[in-house]
Image 1 (tube, rainbow, N blue to C red):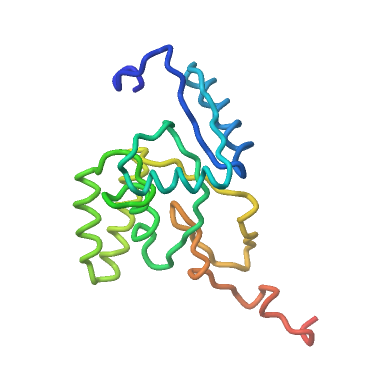
Image 2 (cartoon, rainbow, N blue to C red):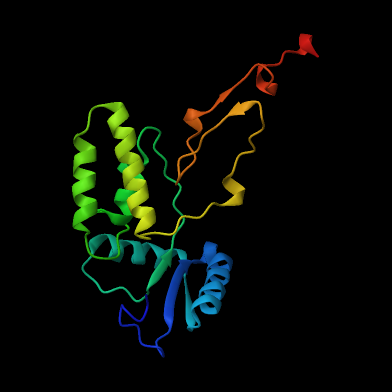
Length: 183
């Protein structure tokens, strides 16, 4: 894939992140270097530098000095994750889009935003998730510190790219449904 894209073997990949994700960035850089047999440089931004990079990214006017930017994103929508998450990373005016707009994504997204039938919207959200996943337009990772424990008393079906706690329910055996009298 790198050869098809015209990657020069002696060029080092530049992986950037903010200071709070430095350890994660170094781990990912090591994995990329080992898997692809290329050099990887890690660029760590201070808080002030991170804000400047995010501004440059949102403006889309300045060339960026990195190839991959690891950024902590925790936004969630309850009804349709692509409305927020995918559009920020892939959409033509997405604040975190680093590459060129993708016509197929824009077409799918436009159709999605016009859909009023909730079942069709759910199917279209799935199709957008699959498109982003299949095209490897972003790498989504889970932060163990942000995960919630789920036991067999909880009905929980996460979306492919985010956890929607609004879609959780618990049965009568869950601790939150227990009273002191039932002990």
